[in-house]
Image (cartoon, rainbow, N blue to C red; front, top):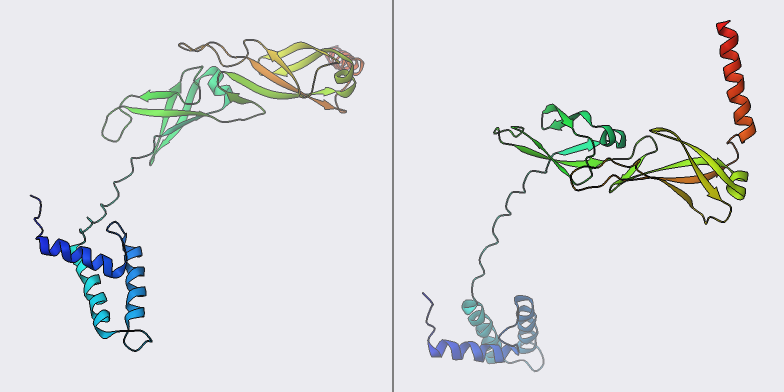
Length: 244
């Protein structure tokens, strides 16, 4: 039920606002500043002051305050929902799946992660909540062992001899899936990156298989093709001598 305010009160508030020189929509700081200015200029002990005007300023301020609507107290902040438990995977775990440990409060639970999970996916843990209800784990894939994941694709870097980077040719790259070769040309703009199709995260649901992108970095420490061949020959020769 709305409060009915007498006409005389409304008129008094308007007059009080005029005395302080503020509008009806003035906020509390503006009203207070106007009162201080008006009461200072009306003080009888100051030049130009007047006792009657001084009393009217004080009465006007009190009247406005009495008729200001009372603002409701701020409600107590609602409790924040508990953060969603995170299932943290390495790129290799995301590729192959397997058992992963997850910390749930004071408990440690072993979860079977299917292969091909992506960051942002949710894995349901049946009965995993404290009340026995299902729990949904948010998936996060962190970089590790030189591999990182973005979307469906994997990323890594591989050192290549500077001469080969300058002249172009076939590059042998050691990936998580074994050795792979790629061809580069001398006119490729830096950074030189090659794509190995199908070596990203495996297909899952509506998500197609990703690719492995390899950034080639020039290195003087990488052996040349001839040096690499000599190393392989020496290794095989040594093994044969030991077996003889």
